[in-house]
Length: 239
Image (cartoon, rainbow, N blue to C red; front, side, top):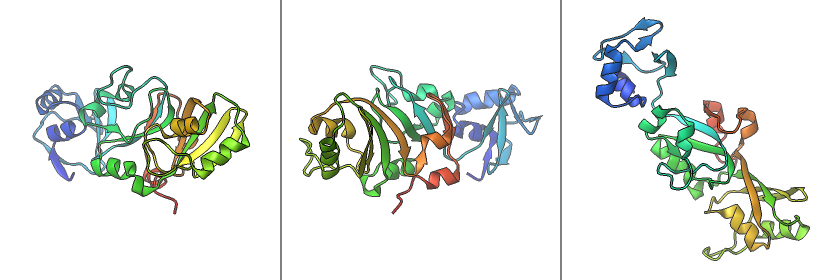
């Protein structure tokens, strides 16, 4: 981002229109290192810049990379239709800077959801060519059998797919529990694969993407965090 005027910096961080950001600055609502900066034309180096706006600290970031522990009954859409959107779980600034989900989880599916305002990152993470494993915990309506596990590992045919889809790994975790690892990321894939194998998915949770687990992030349902460089590196394919 390099050097920008203070009003442009605030606008880039999602604090509102440029006119609104200028008003914030002139009203003395913006400070840096405890010093109020009320000249919106002032240019500042953005690298490592920390602003205090409305008495809350914000690290200036060119792009944001976020992990959210998505609860049930939230839609992964900027324009939700039947349930609240996941953006309502984040500060309003992220809506202004057009943060969006990386891929989607069904409204009733819980677990790790990545979000960003970096278009190339979103495209790369969503691309099936990357083969990034995603780990799901599935609760089944009927008891899990060895035959079910074998079917999911061998591949099941979905009506709109040219070839059978198989789980990378599939392990029984309980009478009605499966841990399934997928790479493809097709629409409703876990649910449709279980249905094609003769069972039904009654609950679904995504616990990891790549080698980054929800557990290591320490988030509770509805909580979010910025991803560190080390955590971002775990989102790349392992092979």
